Length: 115
Image 1 (spheres, one colour):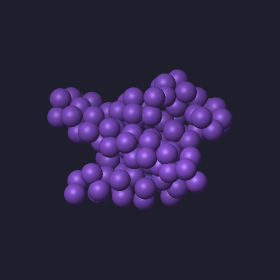
Image 2: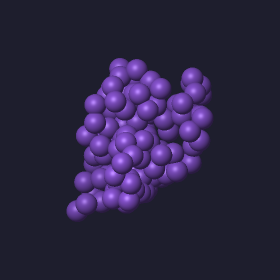
Image 3: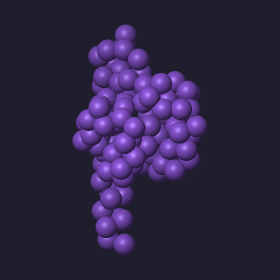
């Protein structure tokens, strides 16, 4: 139980860091795709490499952060699943699955940060 709480707090901190960096980068680089800006902010927030996120690896230590970053990218950008899927080298159904698992958690964390 304590490990789950710790992971939730780490995820919440990573989502907040991702959102802050995304907002800052959008203002600084309006010519770059919002999906790419959000993805790259997520890579830094969750401390994973682009190669890992784009790979076909299904190991939990790569797949779970990848899904969390995909869900956060959809929430932050308000983008389509197919558009987000393209920058992650994934099908839109995979992005939809990630949003169903983690989307509400991302929304809740970001709403609390805004309040």
